[in-house]
Length: 149
Image (tube, rainbow, N blue to C red; front, top):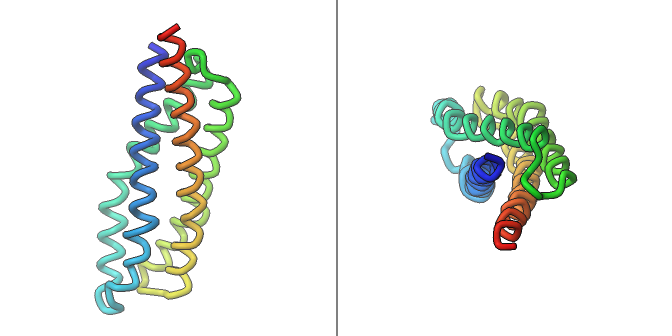
């Protein structure tokens, strides 16, 4: 059961790692190419479409992360699970205290300062998810190593 939990956690985290890099390197930087007239509709569509792509996996990652703290990670270090949860907290705080308010500003129309801030501050989530990806890779590796022993 623990192995399945780790694998679901791994899948959710790496889904989010890839998605965050795509948003960071492609989607957010290209927002300034939309044009002022069409930007409010674009931003509204972006928010409406990205939510269902991101939110379920963020909830799966959070839930499985909490479960791994509760039941253990099947031979992985508890400190890795704690560090991983700390990074989830960083990601969620960044999302709801920084990126969501910037999207709220952009919903009223393109604002170059808000856009630049969005691109710059999203590195918090991008790097945190990348570090999480490394941590869950170590958890999976420890399961493989333990199974092979």
